Image (cartoon, rainbow over all chains, first blue to last red; front, side):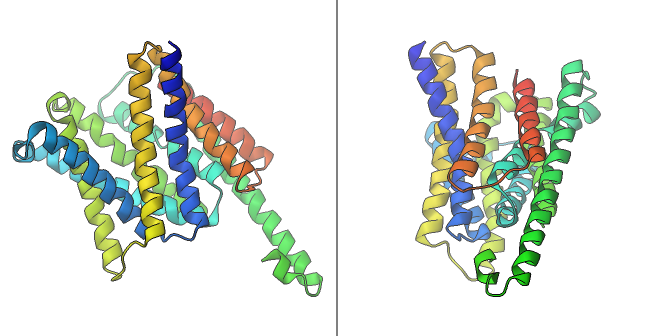
Length: 167
Length: 138
């Protein structure tokens, strides 16, 4: 069991470091579109190499066209998601932005309930309500940050020579 | 701008993940899960490439390292979860701790290493968000 919990700790570190690398990219002035293209390149290369090594090249020719269509469309959405996330980081904090991207699990949950008529349990209802409240609170946090920034800017304008300290 | 970008990210990231549910509903997931994931990444790469290379640019060394770091972290995260389950950690613990812990780690790094200031609203939003994710995972 000790090895299991060690592996779990490694998993937590791995999942956390995805977000930290996003912030690092923003901090080091990496271009969002460059990050997007490189992330998808490495991920596509690694998964394609794995699939071909396991099943050979015919794996793609035997893929049903409906599956190829769905994965194609959803991959496009994912690409837009990473690009907008990395672009948005310039204007916000990783601490709150990472919560937003993680809470996007609400979208497939709602779509599954609506399209597949899945059972709406008490737990799912509670989760969706918590996600909605959480998103509202994060939006309020952004408003507080904007107010703080504007107050700082206006006070800097009133103190000659202090502008550079604020910017 | 942050709100607009995060809303787009929230919707598109959720829609991107919904494909798994559709494919599972069609009964194709068991036989084709790996080709689904590979095609999903290839499609994402194509769009990213069209957007980026139309600017006649190329990712520099720093951007490549950061992106490889993200991809490797993702792989380490998934392998760590798989091994934790294999070594006997109960699924409800793995699926509770991994997303919640990862999120907490990012928040902690934001505050400690990147000096981000979070208001009481933000703290409450983060706590509720982690609670919702943990509840969804079990």
